[in-house]
Image (cartoon, rainbow, N blue to C red; front, side, top):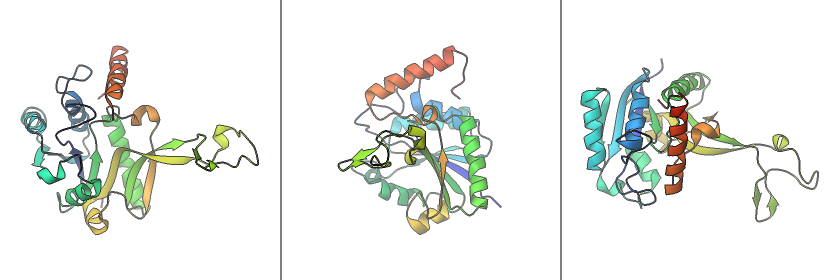
Length: 237
């Protein structure tokens, strides 16, 4: 039987590339990307718990307010300071995250993917249920790349001695892990010390959904896109 799905949002303090990216206003959401992600997850009935892992008191305060006001599934787990530094390795955090629940399936996601909506999360959980039945031990979202990829030696994913410029759709695709979501049982995470297992299911998301925010100009661009969606009557929830 499929285990309960537990959403996990890492939201550390001290973002360096995009100041206060978790909670500064975004596209009409006063509490920013954090509020948007909590509102998206709160619409997903197949999630049993929503955990915020943070060392940021502003994130904690708003998440606790959201729990009291809107969704009792939300809880805040204070992250140890040594795991909330810009120098903290993701591997160290993943090993820590694996201990947050004894059982259940982790759904790790990030506030910096504003267009991973509630319906996308529901689809991801359904896809995980199928993948687990088929023998996969994890699911990771990816973006398919049908592009001309080169390294220092020239073309990487096509043979230009056969054809200099093949049709892009004929190039062997590569898959970029886009970090929009990871699903994996907590027990398997503890066993392997990772958020991707030995038999992962690569779940494709279009770039229009998987777009994320790493830099200030991306924050402004995705905010403009969100405003455009809303003005045209498209929900971002």
